[in-house]
Length: 182
Image (cartoon, rainbow, N blue to C red; front, top):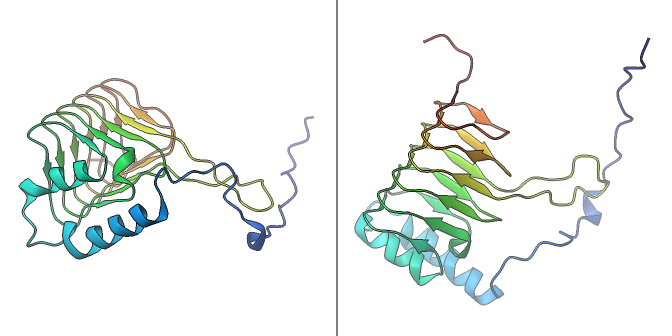
């Protein structure tokens, strides 16, 4: 009979965390400027949706045409964001892009969705980063309050259903759900 014992628990020392190997991609002054603009202007309901792509471009994002970004959308690092044409990003979505997020054409990221490129090495004593890029291929849909985790590609025309979590690649045309009967 095979030994199925769980590996020993890791004694964490978060005080020792150094973020080894992680580069934020811009100087501290640019990071601070973006956070000021993000929180004072970009996420606000009164800031016109048609100006949001231009503001992201000013901070290094590559944004296509006819991109609609609603209010309360949070983008961690604009310089690590690429969005193709005809994309919708719904109210309250969070693009936590410590690494690159690439969004293909005709993609919908619905209200409250989270695209999270960051994680940690769970077996590492100081819990160092374990980040990876996210790619949403053309025609994909990340539905309301869904989560796409680091290193995942959501294939062409695939759907990550409402409140579902995509923790591994989603093939073209596939649908990920929470397992609740419709």
